[in-house]
Image 1: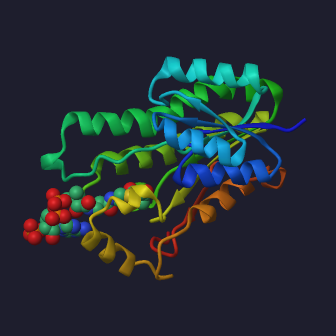
Image 2 (image 1 turned 90 degrees about the vertical axis):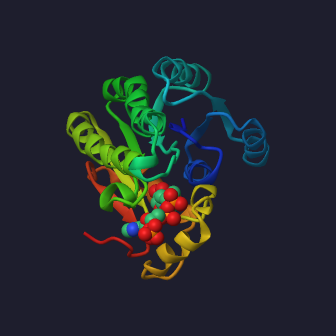
Length: 240
Ligand code: CAA
């Protein structure tokens, strides 16, 4: 029977590419989304992948949503924590709400999803968790103390949970995308984005599929010896 994968924020942008890559890799995929109904419907119509609505920043909603997927589709073997938002602004202009909302969704979402699914993976002796971090969690970014802190937190979360999952056959890894051609990056003011792209050695934005292929590999049987690692996919923008 096909293994079951949940992709959070899985109906748009990088998440959409991950959902379809996992489906093409033989997984039964449930794509979570938070609010954009029209986009989710169009995604399901185009891909045949079922979309499930809940807020990953809401602990109870995650427990309920994952239970619903398990009941309707089957036990959850793979989670890709991709859902994330930006609320950019320099610290002196950033509200507490902008700080908190980014932490609640981007970092809190990883905890909530793991709480809902990691125990089952551990009991069944197989699992894959892939957390989508960011180059900006590795290197920092002007105007993003909230996002950089949450993404940096994801990298620590990944390494800690990897240690807990290792002896149960559950791998936990992160991917740190650079600037990818998505709605999120398109929202960066054009003059700022131009300067950023000028610093990418390969000379272009990345494509969502280039992240999705990395995720699909980390979720495969072949990647069973890789855990606690971060795969940087950023066109050479940050190397360390
Ligand atoms: N380093 C130092 N100074 C900088 C700077 C930098 N990187 N960027 C801007 N500044 C300076 C400017 O030169 C300007 O200085 P002066 O007033 O002396 O001229 C000052 O900071 C104000 O800059 P802005 O005009 O940009 O200020 P703003 O308040 O209008 O905008 C901002 C601030 C919203 C943070 C804007 O700069 C911005 O959107 N930056 C891009 C942030 C970014 O990269 N977000 C990524 C989103 S996509 C994503 O996050 C996905 C992923 O994982 C990669």
